[in-house]
Image 1 (spheres, protein in one colour):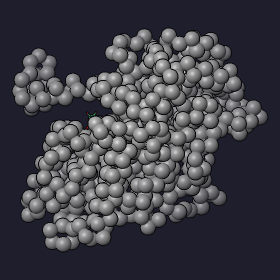
Image 2 (cartoon, rainbow, N blue to C red):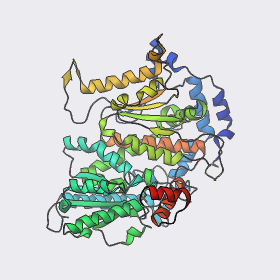
Image 3 (cartoon, helix red, strand yellow):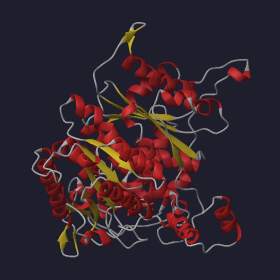
Image 4 (cartoon, rainbow, N blue to C red):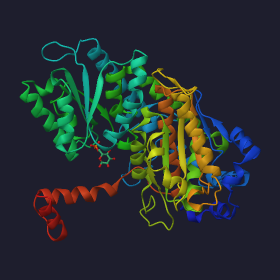
Length: 527
Ligand SMILES: O=P(O)(O)OC[C@H]1O[C@H](O)[C@H](O)[C@@H](O)[C@@H]1O
């Protein structure tokens, strides 16, 4: 099928969407109407996860218009083209294959004579074999002692996703007897980041994973040297304590400085790489290859569900289109992801890179400026902590910020306490339910300072428990949402030219080749 890579403002269905009567969320969510909406506007995802969009500013007319937009924008056909190996990343002239690391959705994809699914599975197997040998004490330090700690050295997509996934499963692993090694992460070039981690571990029993797709990222290479110095000072041979994860075309790929090297390729973007070796090495060492496999299985199920052409049976596509409606028709400039789960403490940080580095673009996939807004600002914190931080603005600010909640019926560790007739988990869940209704319905008060307008839209993904499988599902849900939104905005969601200028100027500062303001700033900062 011929794909129409057209700008959003050229689509007839977009013009129609703009004419649909907006929904009054406060009214829609009040009384029995509200109760019925919450029961009906819900889509099962997998393993007990459901996507509930009752508190979003949609009704049958809006949903019908969004479905027409999905069709005219050929979202499913474009997704199919992507997973069948088309050059979707126009900025770098590359395929986009992160879904292929967790399952095959369509045809075999062969690039440079290599079946890519087989390549990714082979890397997963190599990592599993390596991790099993480390856990069994067959791979040890030079003194023949087992490694107890794994430290990932990486930044951006080589840190944010893997770190968020590790933190999301650390306690689950501990109570399910899957906790093999503690993982730590060094990412910032700030020397205190590496120093603090090195001071907190026993380097003699630590294995370091150098993760850099390009193999050229200054922060990561600097931190590698930082760690090598520490190993040398401890009288240790760094090559016996380091492994590498990189693309086969990177300078690191050929180096023999490492115990082992595992590969990703240029078709996996950093922010989409948690299910590649970038996340696979640290998660398999920390929790075992079987846990990483479960994580992949959850993501694979969502990838499959995202193929559904029926908008109301495709939570990823629906979430994407509601986000476009909120951004381009209702005019909301940002959105917040609020996981009511302390284990997901760094998930919003990962989504900031995933979403804003993908769709924070002002030209379309052909390099032509677009005349409409694209990717929103993303932020978020776990609940209930966020309630004590920025919810004032969310409830009574001058901007409406659409919200995406995540909540689980059960915690991971299983320890709880009953205070004032409820458990902490019940209090956590009571707060997220209350917040959804408070945002949607508000509260009238003659004292304007105590008045809540309501009309603040939100969705919630509800699950039984955060497990490797439901975590994989959540990751894929947001990855596919971002992909579909990029298709609607007709931008290339898979390159990141916007991060290059800062790096170039930083290099000039370090080479003392500056003038004007940059020179004065350099002097002020004693560089
Ligand atoms: O994995 P690396 O090649 O070291 O890149 C690490 C990060 O830096 C780049 O600047 C990009 O912003 C990210 O998309 C990438 O994940």
